[in-house]
Length: 542
Image (cartoon, rainbow, N blue to C red):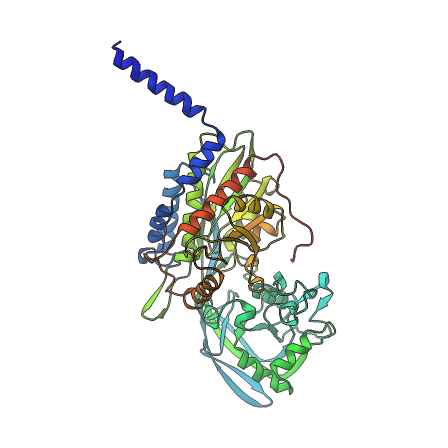
């Protein structure tokens, strides 16, 4: 063999030997450094394009989205997780509501006519063609909460069956300024609109109306309008949702004040009364009349799931999640009707894909399996993740943790890591460990009253006792500081959240999301390889 060929062969063999001996620390550093904000930009630009039609479940936009994700998983090298497929079928029902444009409230013998979207928003999950409520008594039921844990029952001393429950959004802790009442300013699940409707139905109410307040809800009235679109999707229910209230509605505060004045009180006075544990519901001298029609069809949507098999503990898994869906095509705002969802939740999907690429670049494989989970129908109530936890790929007792990504704002590098649901598990300590290496401080959610922990897919896992982390840089811009960042976030929520203007823009700065992806990758690597599993702390607020 010629000398030059021998030298070349020796060089190749030496390089291979050196590569195989590369330390885990070096591999991690290389994988971390290879996480690319440019790749995330490319992914978001595709996912948030008009061609994807707002990524609504059951539409052509879904087909394009899930095929894009499956192709990405395949290119990365993730294995199909569902019987040889990346797709887990999720049975949904799509309900197209045709609500009356007005609602009539008879107050002390005088009719008050409310205008849809301006004064109220309403839907029904009942699979019935004609749904009507006629002259049903309205009762103010405080916060609409029954919580033995907090020794609280807003429905005591009242029979609400066949009537309309009018309730406040959030929970008593928000309005009381008492840190010992419920969880103080931090919303519990009892404060969520989903709970209000669930509890009113359990009490036998014919309808439930939530009084909107932007600060207490965590979003403006426009979000209520856009989220209560004519067409919604839900998990299929065996009873056709007959166990739910006939009508689930929202009203503006000014409307609620008018209704309460039917009982010679005001919204302000009623709120004060509702803060007392001995509060009793107030019968209003008011009756509601409303009608709507429903059309529906069964549809099959899809969770998209790929995985990296573990080695010595491959029967256990860590789940990364980021929902793929958004609101589709809806009401036109400023000439645009496509709700592209660039930030909600395109940035998070792109972040998850980069984490998957980082794991696959490691020559050393994780001990536990790593699942990459893109659920459907999050926007209509965490439906995809709720279905998954009832039909898991890995048994729940083998699912050691969930790291969920949601609403990652592309405003550049952050000085903080904000944990929503701070104090739920010892995963907080892992965040602190790796955030310190990034010269970042760990902070609790600075808007706990918004209840974000209950508004994204990690809650589906948390309810099942699985440690679930929801974190991101969100409070302090490294370059511009805290006040600047909080102004940017507030403006984004007011102007873009659940609106067509949530679009990809070339000015977006993904360096902060890259930083978060690196953080979540390192946390996940440690969880995947440590002997001990993360643990949930007791006394969670649900």
